[in-house]
Length: 68
Image 1: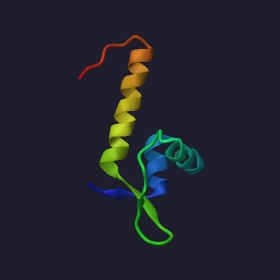
Image 2: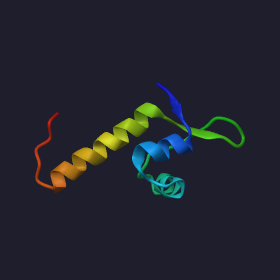
Image 3: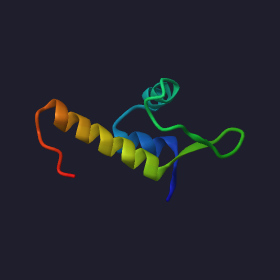
Image 4: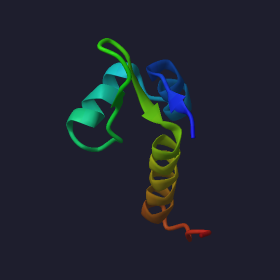
């Protein structure tokens, strides 16, 4: 497990930081972890699972079979 900061999460997902925070508020993205009073991060496993789920959803919408 690794704690990812917002820039790393943005790089992995292709989303902007503001989009990530909006998705968190809408409960559509993993919750961030409060590291200090002014720093937050995300569990890398949660972010990777979210990305994997988005890929699988896209395959289903496009009529492709799930390889799992």
